[in-house]
Length: 285
Length: 342
Ligand code: HEM
Image 1 (cartoon, chains in turn blue, purple):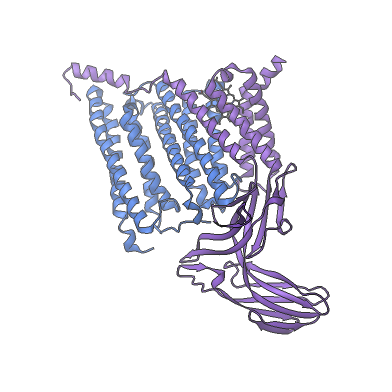
Image 2: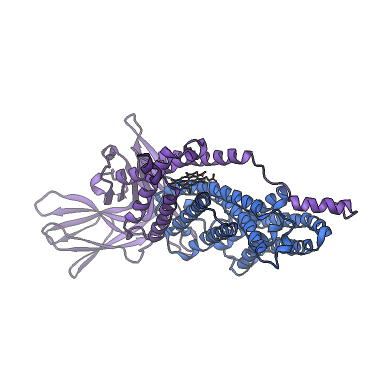
């Protein structure tokens, strides 16, 4: 890795992250203002457009950063943690921006969702931006399907977790007034689980595409390696949570906690397992 | 009977089965070889019985097309995976350039009790290979040439490697990182017919420093070999491993007696003479056979389509909430009272 070369993509990344940070601050500010009466609600809506604009700007800047790196090193952001995090910051931002735009009702979730993105951004800042070598098995077209479905899976989980976060925050008396402009918990709960169902569908597709790729790449479709096991457990947890809701009367806040738990597990599956385990699925083999 | 079915179909069992499956998967985490298989088989069997009973007896599943398709596909995946385990075969083989595939050469063979493929029909001849390396000895694409029958009495050349296996009669041959050099030798025993064979050296460039092997001829003393290679290996620069471009001197040691042989040279040893014919190469393949692969894929995809259709139908009647009713109400009030308009 050459420091000067990396410099070409990092400024785009820094400005993208700055746009996300401004979006976060504005979103929090908007929610805080919403506490103070009807006019506050109007204020929230005005700020929402600015938040949307900033997230979109962040996504565009991250796109440029990724493209510059791609052109420089000759392959996509699929290999090391630095690349995976930036690429997720891009895709989570993109899917969230679309959801934010199309579903105004979820907009206050930005106070939960955007800090998660900032946390990932801070993590990137701590990682050495080394260039990665592209493993020969990554030229496979199933990589695109696997990674693409996985991105939607995590993004839908994130939106679900955002809604679950609001439900939980509303359970705290001092925080409840900030979110009083939102529909009742029951509606949010329903919406959050809709996103989890979307997550389940895309998780299933990710597992299928991953198994096909694993068969091509390593001559076996499933071997319970660390990442496979972790993703399977994640899929099972969503299925089990949906079933528990059908079988028992699960209190809304317990359901919200389950969603947060599923998101946290997915987060560690993505960014923990591949870089902790010594298993084959580490990418560079 | 019906009562029994209803009992077995309880979704409480589903949760129990899922819990046990999660435990079984966690136990298998990263270490499936040392974990007893029943930690997965028992929960899957519970879930399969539970699911079958639910499909038969529970109208909430069997009257809803998409959901029914999804759950049948789950059952199908478990059954196909089980059939796959019973009929599969995995093995490894090291193929020397110019050799024809021979079943006897297979190593570490594992097969299910119902395995019944037509491995004896598999014919191919190994050719040369190349492997690219990026600076820092990072392995890049492998290109292994093979000849397969073209069906008209001739041969067809194919290039396989990495994620592109050679597939013959349903058997899939994947190149591995395990590949290296071999010395082609002729042993000419005193008073008997000469025999030609190969001595495989350890994987290259992984064991660049230890290109050794040993062989004991019938009625002879143990012979130790050391291959001194010239491959052009450059650890800090991009490099292509191409055994055809490599040169190798074979060091032969019997007891304290040591000779260096160039290709074509021979040496007299106790019990006969040994000729180093030429330097060759071998490619290590992983062989994999599982007749359920395509079916698993189809069943899984159909299952996801069923699940999507179920939710599509379910939510078609409940559109996404567009804006918060509470917020709109507040805005109405604000606007009516001369508040800020949006
Ligand atoms: C293996 C035994 C299983 C049985 C007996 C079973 C049974 C059922 C039943 C009876 C329903 C309909 C419930 C209702 O609408 O009241 C249902 C729905 C569902 N099941 Fe399963 N299931 C099993 C496994 C799974 C698994 C492994 C998953 C996924 C990981 C899964 C995902 C779902 C989903 C997503 C629904 C639809 C939920 C909804 O409409 O909100 N099921 N299942």
